[in-house]
View 1 (tube, rainbow, N blue to C red):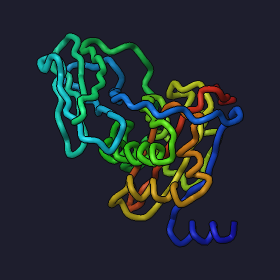
View 2 (view 1 turned 90 degrees about the vertical axis):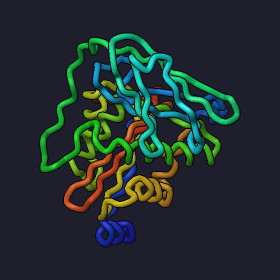
View 3 (view 1 turned 180 degrees about the horizontal axis):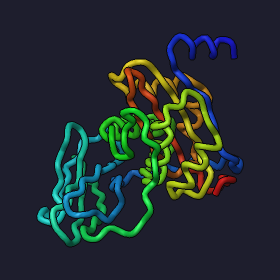
View 4 (view 1 turned 30 degrees about the horizontal axis):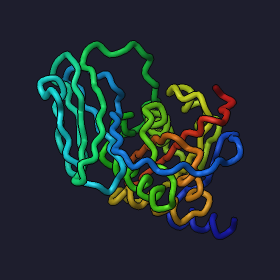
Length: 260
């Protein structure tokens, strides 16, 4: 514990594990070899809205196409793909790899479903819920790469957990605040228990890699990252005054969040 305190003091890295009450561990599932495609903002978009596409397995080059580019176009931004809502209607977005495997997601452009947005208290230049998406997508890719290397299935993105993780990182916590984290998950729409990792470090370069490396090098955080019980993931990143705050939330459906 003394060594950990010294490390936090010298590197400004906060890494404390919290998992809301869970059931005993289950056997690891056999990794799914099919291509999985999901949209960060869900299956319904407004005209003009952009949504990052999460495609797995990671560490693979994909070709992404739209069945109707006039309804939903696709753009490649660096190593990521983005869906762009152009007009009302429905389009199927398909991702395929070099071996011919493919997967798809159907996106509908029109009126958005009525829902109350998660409120995030304004604080300095804290990021919004959809900011830093390239860093967050890269973090998810690295986490899934780590899970795959350790024999457990990769995790699809859960929008509620993405929003909860970002809401917590926006608070710029340097240690875990369990009640606030649990409430953030409920307020964002995730009703079950979860595991979460937090890390804080100076600097903003290579944020995704640094965050995941910190968790890999901490046994408790590493176990949370590769927990076979988890079925979805959300991450948050906030950069403020030269410091980076990162959260990972992983959903555990057979567990309880007492704030739900």
